[in-house]
Image (cartoon, rainbow, N blue to C red):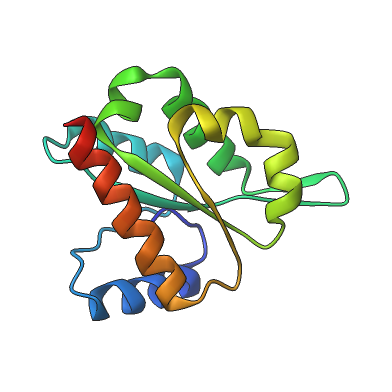
Length: 130
C-alpha cells in the first residue's frame, strides 16, 4: 500500500489482512520503489491518484505510475491498482499509462469485495506472465 495518509493505509491494511493477504506499507514513492526493486517476489501495489479541478493530488503517485510504465522490470514483476476518488478524470489524464501497466482504477471509497477482486485479478495477471 503506497499512500501518504496513515489512516488510509491502516484502513486498506485491515481489509487486506482480513482476507489473509500479507501487507507492506510505504508512505511515499521513494520507499515503495526501493522495496519493489529489491523484492524477489511479485507484489500487487495499491496507490492513490486524484485530480480535483485540474489540481493533482498524489503527485508522488504519478512518479510511481511513471516509473512502473517506463521500467519494464517493474511492470513485468509487479501488478498495480489505482484507488481514486476521481476515477473518470484519472482515466482521461492517465489512461494510456495505466493501460500500459494493466492497472485498473477503483473508485474511492472502495468496497472491500471490489478491492479483493481487483487484487485477485492482479495476482492472476502476475501468475500468467510469470
